[in-house]
Image 1 (tube, rainbow, N blue to C red):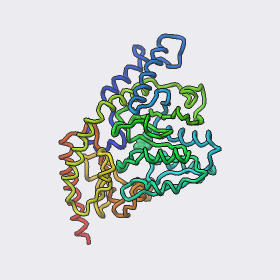
Image 2: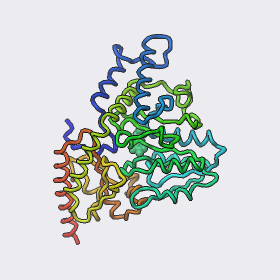
Image 3: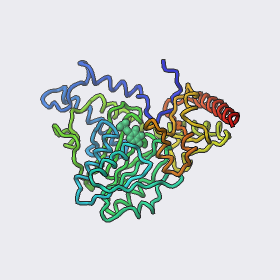
Image 4: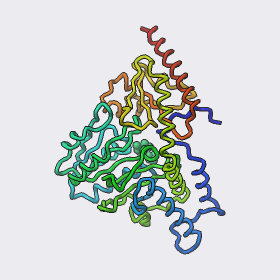
Amino acid sequence: MNTSIFLDYASTTPVDPAVAKAMMGCLTLDGNFANPASRTHGPGWLAEEAVDIARHQVADLVNADAREIIFTSGATESNNLAIKGALTANSDKGRHIVTLATEHKAVLDVFTAMESQGYEVTQLNTQANGRVDIEQLRSAIREDTALVSVMYVNNETGVIQDIAEIGNLCRQREVIFHTDAAQATGKIAIDLQTLPVDLMSFSAHKTYGPKGIGALFIRRRPRVLVDAQMHGGAHERGFRSGTLPTHQIVGMGKAFELAGEHLAKASEAIANHRNTLWQGIQDLPDIQLNSDSEYSVPHIMNISLGTLDSQRFLPALAPLALSSGSACTSATMTPSHVLTAMGINHDYAHSAIRISFGRFTKASDITTAIEKIREVTLAFTQADLQRQ
Ligand SMILES: *Cc1c(COP(=O)(O)O)cnc(C)c1O
């Protein structure tokens, strides 16, 4: 039995029981297990129908056409397909590409890969509130800029970028615009009928669906050209070959349907959790909120605790399961690239922790979190004082 208090929903979410149930119906002989590409028999048609329903469920959450949704293995693959595929398919547009230093590695590492293939990369830092300065972005776009990629909701801070404004700028300059929305679905309403976005990446497992499945929105009007990265059978309109995993797709569809139903109500409960937690700890010594309160989702809260080292005190916070704001990418501890790009100083970046809430967070979890964070922070501060 898992006795942790899970406050790390930004890393992944548990699968909703209704999603697990739908998935289990697509595995065994008595279920919907057939290959959705089998056109010669009833079981195949049934599987194809289940995939079609799921595609509509995903499209409906973001107000897209189901024909614009391509299933992939997750947001990492969607980002790769979007960025690499759009660049090679639009090679006449130029070889300059723009992103933010606060992006997820699943975008930054793709940009690095493109750089090694001769593309020129501009990586912008953000303002102190975590948002890109639109004027800075405007001046970064050149005649030969082919693509801009800016994430919707940041996974470390919860900061929301102004996707409509960035998209309009890209439209004016005829630049392809991709956004990684892995942390946006289920947290904010998304309307692709009005948002000027060409390509949008999704992941199921940040939204109470299973790991290993995601999708890419590829706009049909105006049509965005994308080259496939995976060949073999021309599934998914040729954009992504491979036998469709019916159970994963059905799980993602159900999860996105639930996300739409929960959106307003869950967000209110989560905002309450966040406010209660902050009120309970905001008087701690040298505490700082790194998530801008005006421009972030309440689901993700990033705080720094002065000169304390989060790597040292996080283990002491058990049974709270939460994440450090620092990505330990190697033996040498580097503080979070996101916080650094926001201009947060070294000590505060090192003491950062990310607390993220979700559908199953209870008021009692927050009470325990407040007690535990207070107790451990005060004990560590005391110990540091004595050492001085
Ligand atoms: C989790 C996450 C990803 C990676 O998604 P996978 O489906 O695990 O590949 C990409 N971008 C952001 C912003 C994320 O939070």
